[in-house]
Image (cartoon, rainbow, N blue to C red; front, side, top):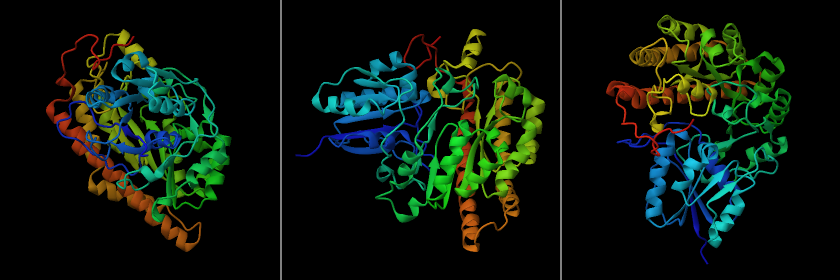
Amino acid sequence: MKKPKLLIIVLFQNLLDAKPYYARNPAPPLPGILLAGMTPPVVEVEVLHEMVRPINYKTDAQFIALSFMDYCAPHAYQVAAKFRALGKVVIGGGKFASTFPDEVEPHFDSILVGEAQGVWPRMVHDMIAGTLRKRYDADPGGSLENIPPPRYDLVEPNYTAPIVTEASRGCPHPCTYCQLNIRRVPYRTRPVADVIRDLSSTKGLPWFKRKMAMILDNNLGGDIQYAKELLREVAKLNFWAIGAQFSIECLRDDDFVDALAEARCRMAFIGMESLNTASLAGVQKKQNKVEEYKNALEKIHRRGILSFTGFMFALEQDTTEYYEALPAKLDEAGNSVILSSISIPLYGTPWYRQVEAEGRIIDRDLSHYEGDHLVFTHPLLTEQEIYDSYRHVNMVFFSWNNIFKRWWRFMKLQSVQESLPQFILKIVLTSFIYLKLSVFQRHHAQHRVFPEIRRGGADQKPAHTEGTSEQIAYA
């Protein structure tokens, strides 16, 4: 007898987009394939990433699971309504559903609140039996042991590096804009052996896609001793390249940098966020020291590790003078690639509560809380000044001339610290990764952000109807 089918969809698009936007991201998000790995074999499973392909409303799946972030919530409600109208059973989950379950619950047949590993198998069995409850609550801060490996075989071929996993959850830092600080949970790590098992569970992938991996932690260096132990084990897997995410103060530890290099880390995502000390202090990002940026980035660049740095516009202490000097400051700091965004006071965060109390929220459309819109009144800058600076910095940074200059600056720092074939492979891979990331960010700015700025950005706002599901209604 044929098994019933479950379609897991990881949402990406915004509500009411006239034309879908497909991102050129080299690696998939983790939630969908991790949930597929936890799914008991009583159903057939398919995973769809809306980042790279459209939703198939003609699917033969009887059951639909939607994973979504906050800015996708209105879109998730729309997608769920369409599938439910077609007679499908629709389950919702993810960080937003776990943080604001009472808002999310009415739009789904069932929701999963919290981490999936202790609850999802039971939900699937109840779903098949027709006894699905309206809501399943996971134990907060539950064990991270024995989580099954992600289903890399279900990743679309669009992705260059399908192997993604996590070694920890949470972050020890109190940054006031961060969603992790809405309801803090302890920083936790997974057993090293479990992470290594994930990275080795590559059956069904082409051989060349088994050679690169991403460790998608919020902060791998939250427990620096654990991180070094893990990286030394990852080094034994002989990947061509891995990527990791951690906070910049980890680079003060030379042993950590050595462990990254030994594991063949070729890209590090770091939350730099600002080159303005006052702006960093304003969001309690105390671990970042602007005066350390240049030396920290050069330290990893010399080891063949590209820096991919998060960078935020419209932090409260930003000024026109700061923005005028920003292209030169970025060049001096030596960033390889930046991931720029408009800062967002996500509801529930300490920063949101501050801005809301001051009456400065001007846009409550959840679909605008993705980092491409300004949703609050800045105390020092006009909306136009922020958008103009965002556009100018991106145009300068991602000009083809500057892309080449940064690549050449990185190449000049390289020296042979391994066998000649491995050195050549390092040069080829870092060049490939650098180009992929640069093109992805250039493409996003040109096709996603700049058109929005030309249309007037956040000046075109929907009417604020109190209490609708498409608006923020949280204290």
